[in-house]
Length: 162
Image (cartoon, rainbow, N blue to C red; front, side, top):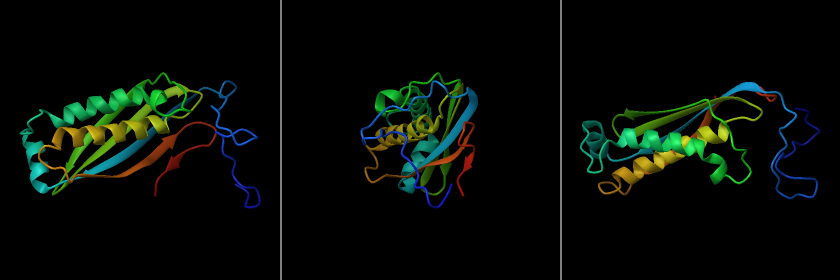
């Protein structure tokens, strides 16, 4: 990008009003995005999750389903997102001793717009669901490091977080 031309915000029209970006003329390409979130907690809480002893049930299974469901509903939650026909959504949760769970969400499609927001929404809602499932034993959990790890496809090219 040129240093003398400031970047433009695609979700604003010439008057500064919010708008949904026109993607009808864009080429259909294979696109994917992976996002992550981390939930920090007491080591004892992580122990209960790993042992399958949380009162509400299988924390990872419920959080995984919630993340997948959230990816499919992203356009209902984020006002200027296009509704997308996702071809796949995967959500993985990994215990990281002594006190965290790392959540990774990947979304894919063949389409005219990217899936970064869907991946970020999936990771975020999976983290919120994990909090909900465990809050009875640990209200001090912290959801952190929600970020895009990588995206592929589309006019802007690939992105890989450092």
